[in-house]
Image 1: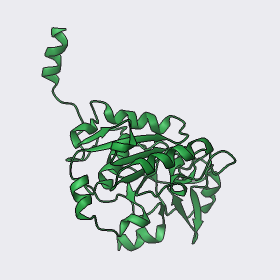
Image 2: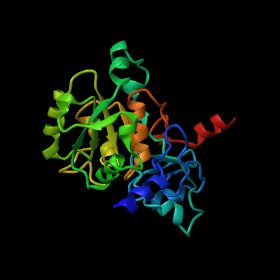
Image 3: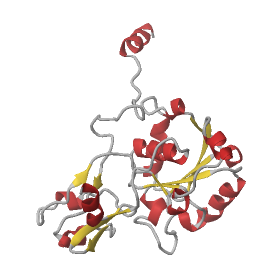
Image 4: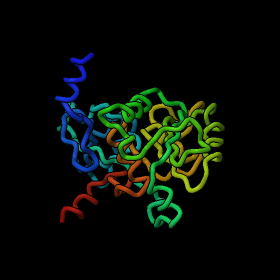
Length: 256
């Protein structure tokens, strides 16, 4: 036992330095596909319809991307470029233009309780969220704590496409939360239905049941992307993406 205590003292703290510093260790994020390729035939490779043909270039719907990497590993066409990074959380259109009220600033400026709702998740997003409680990501240091009841929750973290059996529990959890409150939709399924919906048993995302404040794409999104989304939800970080759809024309305007 003493051996492990001494080793721990020598090793020191190994938690990520994010958000104070950028996390540069390999493997923290699978990245996202970049728009702009003029080889529009590559859109036919995408199994989920995340790649779109627009003005003779490829646009990307991040809400449907499942990180299958088919567009990046194709040998028949020039592969699509991928961008690194993990700050994918962004405010929804309904919330983006609203300045936080004084009550919201007081509420979200302190330690917050997060309630997790599984709305038909395949366990991938849940597995990534579980990592946030591990020593390396340690979301407690940023003031986020998990609560088993929505009645004491400030943020509702939802995963899954919202199956028929989870629609009512999700609505009840949202209604039970005190105001002000935030809803964060995590993963492609929660944003668009992913590979499961819309179908006869699954919906097309959380936004069709309860209002969503912050969205984070990915299948699954890495822990740092989820952590960034929580910081965006409480106004401690700016949105990482502007919209779910990335277009070549918009990148050209920004570059000029």
